[in-house]
Image 1: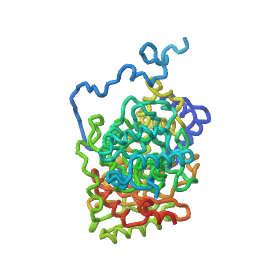
Image 2: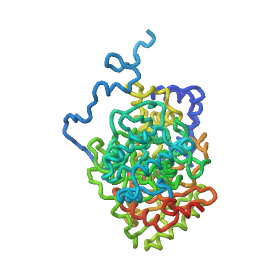
Image 3: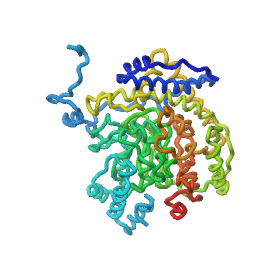
Image 4: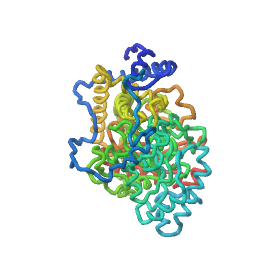
Length: 105
Length: 467
């Protein structure tokens, strides 16, 4: 049997949320802490397996270094209008981005 | 009999013989959508019938003869809203077409609408969709499964002739099993991921959901093959997947994987008698031991969440879509778990461990395929769950996909074919058939042989299923 892990806390959830650029309410953080604890119990069972002589598999195709010519593909080009048409905020043909420095000023 | 209940292959044949017209087919399919879609909540977007029919008419001489296809809403379709069932992408109209939907349309398929899924394909129920859950057309108190639940439900309710879905852990085969349709998950790298909202890039696999195995093979023929825009597609040219339709399975060796899992004994008792069909057809079936699928849940959970946290980092609401506050609960949970397991000091402990466990499954399959041509099991441990079943279940999807995850994380092809129908509930079980990499031909051959020899396909046995 795997021993029970220390349960996750809401504070840990808020820290991870900050790293992932997400915002959580206190209720959400609490709920997520429980879900994290349950999920990591399942994950921790992996430690029961003997993997000492096993290499990791990051992809299954066996393909490596698939090169192609570095050339412009006209069919993949967007016009400025096309590039901007899904943006919520544009200005003079540019995307408008939220301010990320000196947010208080 | 209504035209909507013909298979894709039958409809195509009748159109080419000119015994029916495309307009007859479109009228009946759109009538079906008008009758059922409000209740089932399957299509998020539909196209105008007149413009679809115009496209169909121009495509009549191509492989799919201009017939109507439903597409999971995580494929980018040019100028047609694509949401991945998340409000983050509400209103998003891609400026480009995914490779798979482009090929589908070049080969005579006409997209008549975009169908519901679990938001970002995170789930196995459609209950995480931010546009409401879909219902299982076989029994409206139950879920269709997911994440390609809309695709499976669209096929089961005759609101299209075939559909496209994607599978990362079990997202084609599990909803196919729950809705009593055929779901074909190709080998990873067989169909391009270009233009599909990325979930777990190392296992995402587009593929067809259809009424019959032959229909699934016909659709796969149109979408498979190398793509210069997706370097993980195999350079191998795709074969004709209909070649093994009708081919004998005499002398084939079939391994039956059974695990002693909670709740599985009841469904296994219904499933095992079905395997006698293979013996009747001259194949040999043996029970085999395979690596416990519980570990695949842990492995998949770690690397899938890791890939999700990276793939969903792009949604910042600047170039398209809305900001990150629009993510639903499930997406947040997955992004956060991935962020956690990939964080400094933990990546080696969790991510690397998960990828090593993945290798164990690949090695286990290599060993089994030395002795067996294909491996079979149930597609899902049980019948379709009731509405609301996911509430408070943080690992719902993983547990429902458990019998499929080992093959998904190993990149293998598989098919789910209806293999039992409960006469009381009208709900189905699916037979999962798995073959070595690039051997879709084998799962099609064995699936087709099973389908033709049994009474479980509701389109091929219309009288049986209406008892």
